Image (cartoon, rainbow, N blue to C red):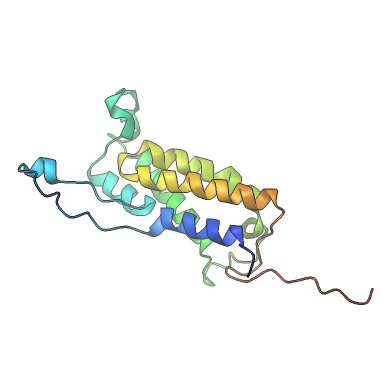
Length: 169
């Protein structure tokens, strides 16, 4: 049996937060009113930022209205979420077009552990992006687990770490 490569697992969790969008659930039987039957779809950070341009809402607006200036009249939080979502997508899925693979930034788990709390915080503040914020927290925990066990990120996006071959010195 192989060994779990935790940074690959964390990469998949973080990619899920950045770009995967699940479909809207089906209506709940027994509910008469359409407003009761309507549920918000689970969105990723990039789609949530785009939706936030049309329907600006802070998640914590039921507690205070002090944060409403982050989404209207100028969409600061939506722009931050869009930029961080695109950065995370380029970081975790480096395409050859951008030449981001095999750079020090791509191989650094420490840099990820410094940037992803900011991405999680910005996602948790925007109403449409609370699920990606939770995924970021889970991905950060797995990255921290990988870092504490001394894992390294391979130069290529989905390469396996090389085994040390015992042999002649």
